[in-house]
Image (cartoon, rainbow, N blue to C red; front, side, top):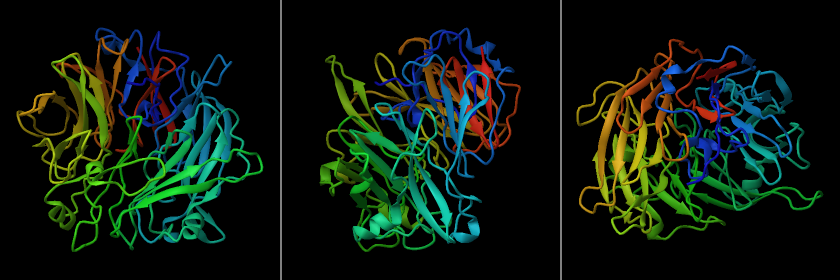
Amino acid sequence: MKWFSQILATVLVALPGAALGQSVVTYHNSPDRSGHYIVPGLTLSAAPKMHRDASFNATVSGNVYAQPLYWQAPGESTGILIVATESNLVYALNATTGAVVWQTKLAPPAPLSALSCGNIDPEGVTGTPVIDPATGTLYLGAMTLIGGQARQKIYALSASTGKRRAHWPLDVETAMQARKAPFESTIQGERSALQFFKGKLYVNYGGRYGDCGQYHGTVIEVTPPMAPSAAPSITGSWQTRSPGGGIWAQGGVATDGTGLFATTGNTFSPSTWEDGEAVVRLFPGLARPKPKDYFAPSNWLTLDNEDRDLGGTEALPFTVPTDAGGTAQRVLALGKDGNAYLLNGANLGGIGHPLQVLQVSNSVIITEPAIYNAKANTLIAFTNYNGSQPNCSGNNLTMLRVTADTSSPLSIAWCGDLNGGGSPIITTTDGTHSPIAWVVGADGDNKLYGFNALTGKTLFTSPLSMTGVHHMGTLIAANRHLYIAADGRIYAFAF
């Protein structure tokens, strides 16, 4: 498993001994979206001593849905938090004090009145950006309003200075029209994290709140220019055959190092299955997948008709230990129908062939899970709004246990009381020891919670109720802190 440090969009937690030199360059700290951070010194006994860091003071202009990033450029002794807002302002903040290091203004955001539907006003940067560590380039998607026209754009900035790279931004609608692929910015929403994989940038799109228009779930592959005089181009695209099928997940597409996993939502009344309610494994170039590279539940049409998207969270690739001492490839998808779908990573199974389906929630699941690889099994944490079985009720953080067992590999390990529900992360001191699940009670009491990831015991509940935290808000751990971004400000906690 890969370790990066991730930064929270509005919460900052100072952790003595955390890996100072680790940058958080992508959503959930890893291309596989594991949400696992190594924080030396943050032990089970240290967690109850967590408190807000009064020496950190950071404010930004605009609402924040995207997870922050943390960038420590080669040769620099201190790092910066990068926060992008719906006002199309991008900030680099001193990660210790919160002072502004640089600020970049993109094109104006689009007001809701310029869009066909939606619930964000104005709309600018919603999905989490990504940094290419090799070049120090920050990529981000933004909804813009230029000349009275709403346009989805992709920008490239220097992560160290905020200066725009030459020949950017890329106008997605114009580039897709050149490929003769349907794409209309006023109905295509982009709330998912960007992914940088094998030198290519991957950006995905769903619809907008309200499901207006004949949008398509879309993944595009963008190749950055190799020469200073060249411009970026779309070198691959995949879209659902039926309208609808939006890709809504905060984490966008996850990768196991070989393929890219996307999940789609409800399509609009097709007579046959046309890529909706699916886990789809794509490869660079984005050619249409074979049956072993996609999965859809056998009741996909019912899910379509009831708007119970499988694509509320991204599918997570991971491994589980086997009795023979090896590992088995697995993929987990969590649906708005409250089910967990466990799939064979080597063969996703086509339509209706999961390894196991288990109801793990009595309501929709729409925030991202986090993964911890224990010695004998794999644990996966997610927030649950209305309880699950067995013995879980009300809002809680639920931990699933996955084993290599062939008969019943998926079960509920524990659940812990929670008021609200953001996307959790998991910290350990060295990749194994003192696993702690951290989560913000977003859209509830907006407090920071910490749980023993093995037992579910509550280790910490902050007395502070933060303001302006959205359910899409995701914590990160970096620079001896935990961070999360909220509307207009970033919060910091220390132990």
